[in-house]
Length: 88
Image (cartoon, rainbow, N blue to C red; front, side):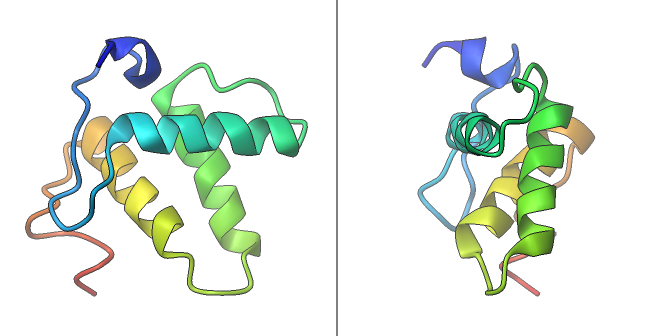
């Protein structure tokens, strides 16, 4: 996998779901396009897009939580084995 979609970061895999950082970035790029937002040019902006969608979502959006987990792990170094939204 190219690091282009992960902005030079390793393509982190979620420990409990079949989901990677590149998946989260691709989702954020699509959401930004649908919402007519500025293009996603960083992991921080990808996290902002996903967080905004989570805040307006009217249901428990598991994919959004998993995306936030891998984005947090890439940006903040969060240990997903011990600190995942799926464990709460």
